[in-house]
Picture (spheres, rainbow, N blue to C red):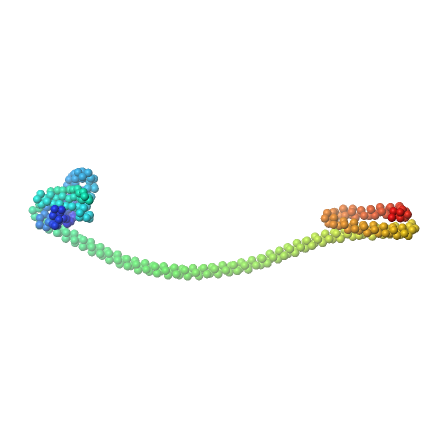
Length: 333
């Protein structure tokens, strides 16, 4: 059986202290017993489960909620003293308990108590129960104190270990940072050396590339010069043909002039002058042809045909000179 003892004050007699004991089997809703004493007299009574259900129905409240309100009023006593109020009348031995909400109050329950014939025994039981409760509380307190001391020692040990872990962590971080710095410096040195090697490897490539470019430039320049020389050689080969034509014509003209058929000196001199003018004009015509040959670049067959044309014109002029008499030539001049 469970029980609870509390100290209460009555509304009708607030100066008198009463001790209220409530005991129950399994649950407060299954019924409970009440014992009330002022230290001299004692009263007792019981509340059944049916009465609890009837009170809950009269108040239009759920039974569980009503049982919870009874627990707060009779057992726990955690709410302020002015929330739950008690009243007792020694004349008719009527005990009631109610709850106050601001300006409104309602009765939770009431019952008629019976006066105990031997209050000393009831008081003795109450005192024994209170002493047992005090003993149990002291034992619990000592047990809790021992647990608290153990937890304090464990906490101090954990704190020391934590401090050691923190110091070890700091030392490890410092060591790792030093190693990281060393590794980083080594990597930087390797990177610098690789950069140097790369530059040294790139410099010969640049030199070889420059040499290749210079060789290509010289070869292209030589090709251009060779092409230019070939063009000039073609011009030089074409020029002697025209120059050789002129002496042939000149020799033919001289042979014609020096022929024995001419009798007069003056006409022969005029003939010589006329032939000289023809010789002078024909090389100029020949000199104007090579630029056309450079631009058009005709084939060798064309060059041969062009070189033969002056001979035909000169032969025609010579044939006319042979067929004509010196007097006719003189008249023409």
